[in-house]
Image (cartoon, rainbow, N blue to C red):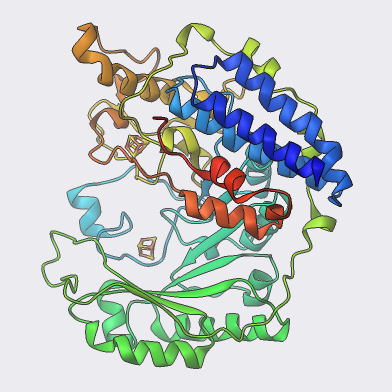
Length: 463
Ligand code: SF4
Ligand code: SF4
């Protein structure tokens, strides 16, 4: 127990540095100390060495991300802890409001070339970011099951101890057994209706019968292997035209073996007045099936990536010499949490800062923050666009005091989309509660107090 309390004491000490005016070098040195001194203690608590290294790398990265976010640093030593990857840029459907819809293309347009993610590209992405991240979503603007390698991608992500989520319209053929055996944690199934007629109003081009049959096959594969995961979550967007099918859908969900059904409000599509969101029907999540196997198929200990051991030998404190110290800021003010926590990659290897889609006519704004085929010497999370965007928010918060000149991009287009972004996300992709659940799901709560878990996961501003 002594060792365990020392580990938690080190986390508390880092929290104290977070709320003081600690400089980066000191913070990095303390993160290194947390890692190196805690490793033998975790091993003596029963964790295999590489699993303990993975644990320490991930919590160190969470704490460092939080520190650099709170201080509004422009150049990060931390890595993104949330990842989004599109296994395929295409989709056979054309839902209104999506870039795969013809009217969307005419009215808004997008810069979204088709493409299929290769295993080589995904593996490079995982090698760079997997050891530090906690979560990966396998969907953004495409149908992930168009890529037959998607179960292999999930398996690789699990070897990096990532929580995995996939969202599909299920209107394509795929290998249901390979998917449930991949180790996938959570599966969102987008089926907005309990009948073919209502379903097709929004999921244009979709095949209702195939989607339902695919749900059946997924549930059967889980049952066959007695698997607790993936959680099968039917997502039902509520429109005026399908709100009368809510109860029917709940019955179907139980019969199909779905674990939960989520009724959610869609975004309004302005040019589709016939498709009105059902405002008066409440959003809800109903558990429909708890009898869903008890075996976690994926054995994390035998499948763990070997890269944790190598990454563990790299000192965080040494990274400061690679950073441009002249551009560190230590400030407060509004910024976007995605710029400090998340990295998105499409199937063609383009890096984006969040889940918006790039436009063709972007009027001098760029939304593509890098490219895997680009200059690999520039770490994607510190590309000129990332740095510019982080600096932009610092500048905005200080404009009243400085009368300064707005920062300019050093290369490429005049500015990034963040400058004109209406959202400027104050919520990260992975919130505090999700991060806490992630830590608990990996049995790390055995050696962490609730207070330590809160410190690692909470991104609130310092007072
Ligand atoms: S299923 Fe998803 S990706 Fe495909 S068109 Fe509809 S919203 Fe877009
Ligand atoms: S400011 Fe807007 S465009 Fe930029 S990362 Fe945040 S949400 Fe995305």
